[in-house]
Image (cartoon, rainbow, N blue to C red; front, side, top):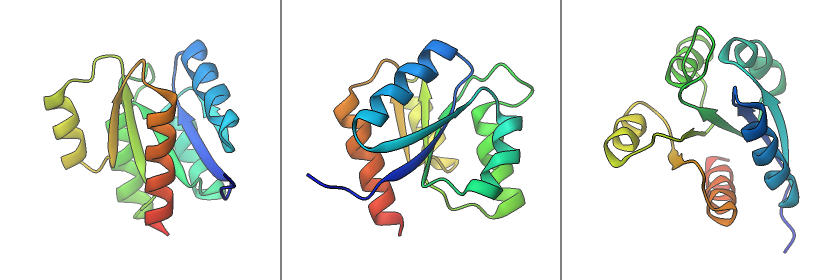
Length: 127
């Protein structure tokens, strides 16, 4: 099935997790760019305008993934769909993150087909 290519920005501080996610997305014609922290993402996003963001909630820099999303909304009135990812995701956390602006939430590890379908849905319904 042919799909329009999607540009995804992965903000993940664990190099092996970022690489695994990037490799998975690339298999599905989703073009990943990975950054290790929110600060670098804030510098890149206004210039690249990715179609979707995949943000680890517990980043090791000065900002969490939630801080990144709030900052994007404050600075750029960003409407880029954002997906929260965390090894510690539970139902309450997912509920709270959705209330704060994340379009979807996934607990690591996640099924490739499910996250890809979610990304495609978010991008197709965002345009």
